[in-house]
Image 1 (cartoon, rainbow, N blue to C red):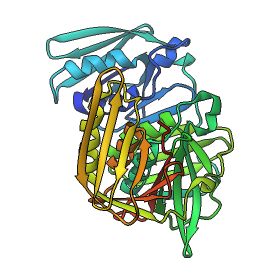
Image 2 (tube, one colour):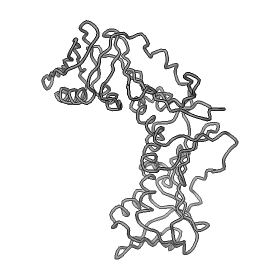
Image 3 (cartoon, rainbow, N blue to C red):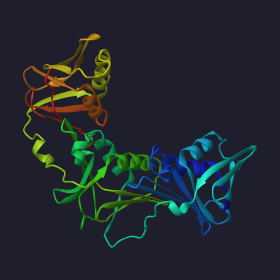
Image 4 (cartoon, rainbow, N blue to C red):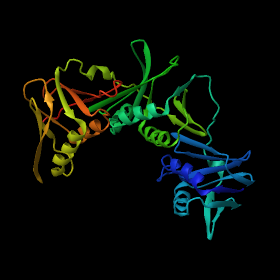
Length: 372
């Protein structure tokens, strides 16, 4: 196996691979990336057995076909340190040694035969393929991933619940995530909504998809099978297992009768929380809000490091209200709001709070107050 390729082209693909391969693995070959030369194209494959990443590069000079696997992390690290736009020459010297030359540099990388690399069929099934706007789906993932739970005992919360919803006769692809302290929901309109099966997309796949959607401008295509979902972006394919479990009926916790409305400038609110919460090193202490007609006083008291408070302008349509939140949760949510003004719908100091984004009517957030 021999080929030549531009360093930048291969590095871009290997950058995505880093998010898929497991650094510490009981199966050494899963730390490797599969390089396969066939039909004048270079295929790059990486997997952790739950996610499979495929990329196909045609801008490559194939001298002789073949395949091998080598450490994804080491190859990536070498390429990062080679000058941009350099030419790389790969030569498989033996089944255990891959030579890499670039300029005055030469490396001999250890390999494992590709016979032991897991294989996954790429053929499409008969299930419908859904085309989704790249930027809209990225926005959906970014707005909902902040609420994904890390609690392994409730594995069905370790991802985003992707399902169909209908509003005023229009079909939406909706993503919802919750860790039982907060909930995020965001939707994008879907033209063809026939035979869509709801599924829970795992956290690792969500972050990998976000990375791909940020860098690859191609149209996103999605196809479902029994326990997997396949995403295609141009020449790149990502196949992921879905979480086996039933997502809870989240609509029960979304308040629809909160009449007390707080309007506060989004950026000022975030900056103020950041400053006041600085006195709490681990952010464990709650953030107290004293909400008045025309201002909000923010207060954090840490037994170990002191206290901080700040007052910012706001509008409130009710009597004074004192309520407390986890400051990190509040910053995460406010940072995903596009509007210049944050709309906070309250009921009392213990009930769930609804946060809306006037610039994105298809997204909302719910946060539970803290008891201090």
